[in-house]
Length: 492
Image (tube, rainbow, N blue to C red):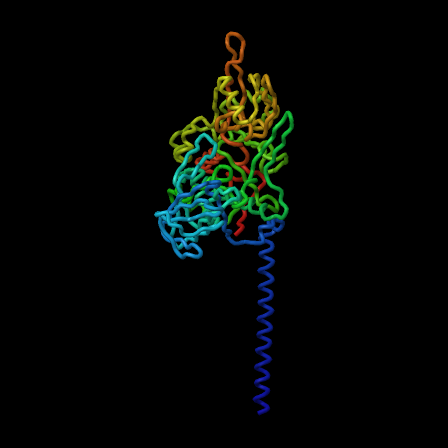
């Protein structure tokens, strides 16, 4: 009996030692895993969002400030309180609530916020979605979306239409909406990383407590300076138009290449030091990219500074004479292409309507420009006498412009506000020089603007990057060119 007890004790001690050893091994393994994770994610340690390393779900504003919304549920959507619903629907404000009705006009549900949850393989259609808002390619179209639909009522009785979707599915649409999915594979991969970085940086800022609103207005008697960023997106993370990133649902996903580009770069972002890069991009820089501060607030972002859109350097513009010489020239740079077959494979159909994006010209009769300025600015300048650039960035884009009239003179900035004031929609860019033409009596007859590039020009040049990919550059090489001093890391 004693021997049996000793044997049992020995077995128990052995089991105890085994368990203790196992726990010690487990503890060591766990510690090593924690150390590994901390080392791997060290570049993001100062970034508030990086405590979550799973693919996030985001909200995208498809339409906003609408009195009525019409659409269709393709498949079934769960609506809280009524179960599943399919088919055509409308939504409108009635007595301070959104009323969701079926194809027969029968009320399904009403409330301040209505959430419609997608069942497997279900889609929803939205009619009359405006794309290119206020730009020269503005139009309406029906669009189709994955994910959940949220309808939310604003205080003024207008409705916001919001799509809740996983980030990677969002990106598959973005790169196909921004550019043609027949574009070179390495360009699409670069764009996927770029767009993911921009969005993650935006989400990070949104989660920082007491983060000031982005966008600013400075108004004095003699100067108006406005710049715009993400200041108006209170009900959702990003909008679906060019103000943020183009997102046109699955309507624009027309090839597997775009989907593959997102999958092959899953979770990858551009980083600088300890932060995810706020990566910016525009359609065509015109040969030189622009500094961040020319378009937005007055600060330096080292990876958003002017570079040559070429393998060889080009001198930054420092005077009006240099601006005129640069804009009147056609330097050998990546985005200087008129290869129609290539552009057809790179640009979306509505973007191909803009053929003169590298160098352009627009002409106004004096009276016509006076009317445009009065409508866009709200000021009566009287007889327009001059348009004078006061400050340019290194790409030639104007950030401060003086408009001189017989009744009023005022300075306007920044880049986008200048483009708005001087066009019925928007100028292609603010990199332009002004020529004043006079009639036989010496009176000003017309103004001619000669310009360069398409968009703000900061960060990646989309057409230039696509040309780089066609020449054999990899996604990493493209991003390193446009965002110097950065690296690519996998966030999740």
